[in-house]
Image (cartoon, rainbow, N blue to C red; front, side):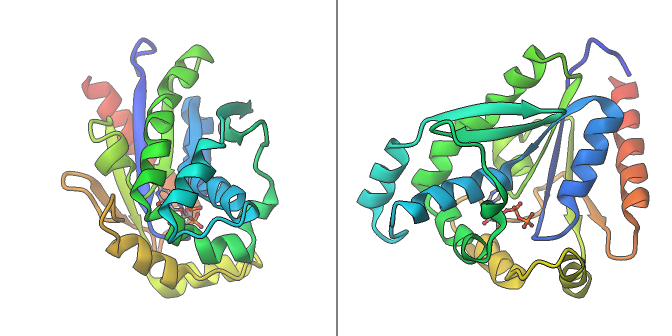
Length: 223
Ligand code: CDP
């Protein structure tokens, strides 16, 4: 891989499709900065819930977002969002956030609030000496980085995903979130045209990481 080239890998997919574990492993292997945009939507949801903002009240959403100052903190190779200096903790994975995040994430002004911030992570990665960026979410290959070097869409059948979450000991409304995320008007969850669709239902994490690593190496070699 040419060390002078900076690579962007976009990994999208439904809830519990294996995006985070795969992205983290790829970031370690290739020295790419890892960004989990789901944690951004979760953190903003947490803050708006704390401020008693009703997702249906657009003025309240606007006021709630205006009160949030965005920042970034880096821990190893993962970049996290900060909101008014607060670094998201485990509370962004709580049941109340699971139950509300998709409703907040469907609000166009909230998505617009995070758009440039997500793109600005390229600069953070470059400034910190990373050789690339691996960003996971729902609309990375479709909206945030449609020109990414590699755009992946991870799929896993619903049963396998429920099993993965149960193994983590997390009660999660993954089907409900997927339904809301796929049916929203702005940046719906879908495999973008030209992206690589990877069914991980019967693959181990190691096998997925191997396959994705091969794709990155092939693309980098061709550049
Ligand atoms: O739990 P899981 O890792 O599968 O989901 P997540 O990546 O933490 O994302 C939580 C929620 O944030 C999703 O269900 C979406 O509603 C929203 N999201 C989004 O709308 N766009 C993104 N790029 C990432 C997440």
